[in-house]
Amino acid sequence: MALKITTLCDNVAAVREGILAEHGFSALVETDDVKILFDTGQSISVVNNADVLGISLDVDAVVLSHGHYDHTGGLLHVLRRLSKGGIRKTRVLAHPDIFQRKYVVREGKKRYVGIPYARDKLESFGARFELQASAVRLASNVMTTGEIKRRVNFEKVDKSLYVWDSGLRRDEVLDDQALVIDLDERGIFVVLGCAHAGMINTLEHALELTGASKIYGVIGGTHLLGAGERRINETLRWLKRHDVSLVGVSHCTGVRVALKFAEVLKEKFFFNAAGTTLSVE
Picture 1 (cartoon, one colour):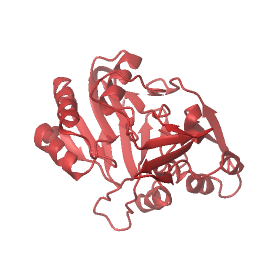
Picture 2: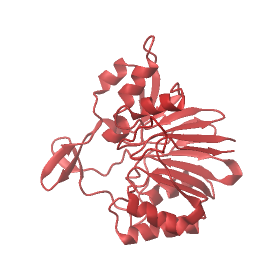
Picture 3: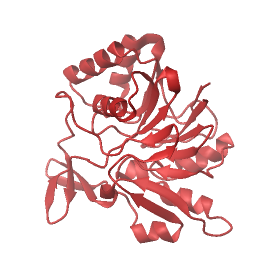
């Protein structure tokens, strides 16, 4: 089975005229059977970069990794593009917590970081939401992780994240999920959004979910920006121990951690940026 992943939004842009960098993440995932837009970036980057690359956004589904603005803010722009010539229904898969009122609180200051649009507005542009916490199979070899089990003790959710319902409370980001592609005997390929549940928690969950014995590759945000040395080193030890063949980090990883990954993983590492295309035959 062939797999093609084109990163349409990232904090860093590949060296190509017209590609926009934007704080956020989005990847177009194509297999023989299905075409999925995983996350939508913060605003216009997905639509702009798809145009620059000559890529159609006519997808079978949009999957949202979680409810933060830098992964969902481009959804309205994508829906508008797909609705040119008349509203069309677009399947949008996410966890039921996707519309929670999410905040970052630092030094006593509260900043809204949730999805920037009301559900009814997105639905008026054709979004057909399918919200569930469990894994969803999108094709015979492609599925979401659903809600991710928290297993390892060195991965903790960012303490600055909160949600508001009857008041502020800590956000465990239970809506965080990833996309998993089964490459048969080569193992599975995992696409991360921001990995709030933890990169290793996500990979272990994906292995259990699929029954696979090997991870061939992983790309996306790792949420290791600002992580301590223990967490970074434990993450790298896990990746080396499981002999992951391709590791492409981006978005919420940070230059310091990316350089450490490059140093340790060597030829198995690449820096994933907007405009980058990865093909696995």
